[in-house]
Image (cartoon, rainbow, N blue to C red; front, top):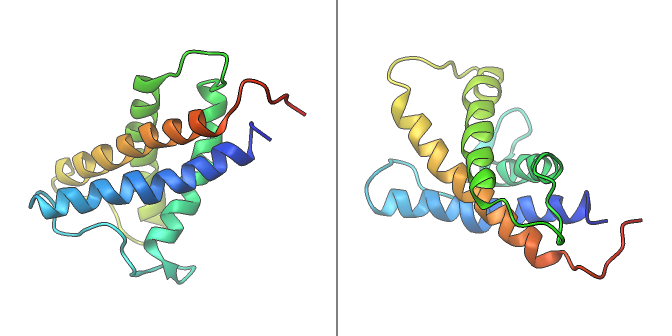
Length: 142
């Protein structure tokens, strides 16, 4: 249960409480034009964009937990979690998800990369916070 369900739930919650909150803070500070919790329909699914992001983030959290070998017995990889979120999720969004949706990388890529890195690094840290909070040392893997 700790290897799939808890990281999935952690990634979902981290997207809502850390990633979207970071976007909201960046918007409030005037650094970005759009805020968090976008209710624009996510093509082609038609669900709100923040829900689609949370679902994809949950899948990424399972991969992150496996790659970083997150477990209660090991030291928490805080920096690696931030880098994983900032680099992997941002690259996937800019170079895979957006082109599938018909949005191609062009022009000055620094602003969307910086925005994505900041929000997704916060997600990586938050996902690890939730994973460590949910995992117990006494629970056995089944």
